[in-house]
Length: 353
Image (cartoon, rainbow, N blue to C red):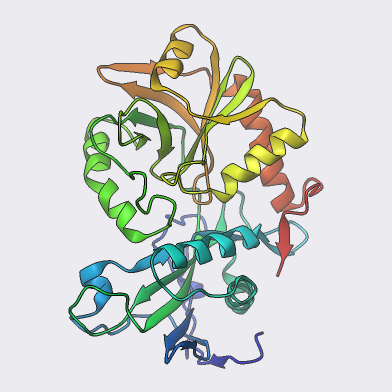
């Protein structure tokens, strides 16, 4: 535990009410949550308190001006009983970068990791021991000034929620290439994991769902000619035997922990990898010519999510059968294996709590 921590336990746990064979993503929460306030230019003592509603002033600046960021992480129980986090240093770094972009006070990376570990240790009986299940971790930070006026808040609340979850996608996904709406433009907040990015995606995503898709593939805001990322994951393609993914050189793509891990792992194995601008035309041509052999999303919630179909304008393209996809199958097997303990963690990515 952290040296300064207040703990207020629930009088009775709800864990006995959980159906562990049915864990819909993001609906079931553990008994406790962590809360830490920022005021007078400093972070206050963190508290672990019973999970439940929080009060909010109607003039809370987050409600009016959107100063809110979050992260997504998972705790996994391996077969030998160890509990690990996957590369929490990358989440801590990205959270700090989001803080800076949104004019919010930074939580030092080591402090962020220790607070996450503290709550996970406290709630570790809630970590599922079933395949494809985990304890999802949601750290988030939002403004709390009671004020109507456009300026950064002077007070904030940092919280961490935990919830046992099953797979985010139960089956391969169908995605639509979006050419009208935009997730992020250069110079904006696309690289920050801020709530407003997701709010902007809801309407076009809902339209895609009505057309039979689960997600969108966003394109660049200027021309809509180049692929960027999907709504809940980053995009990975295999064309002519090369693993391709859109470059993160611009500030319009969120730097995914899992995507970076996929790229590093592929290079570690000696697979050809290219991070660059990828045009829609290039991908559609590769599909038509049978040169695209694999397509999948990479993200904390989705992990490795096979893409079964891609919609483009008035066409729907069926992608190669899942059992033929050597790259994504190998990557998923490795990432699952190091978390479960079935294979060696060659790159030391799993951090024991």
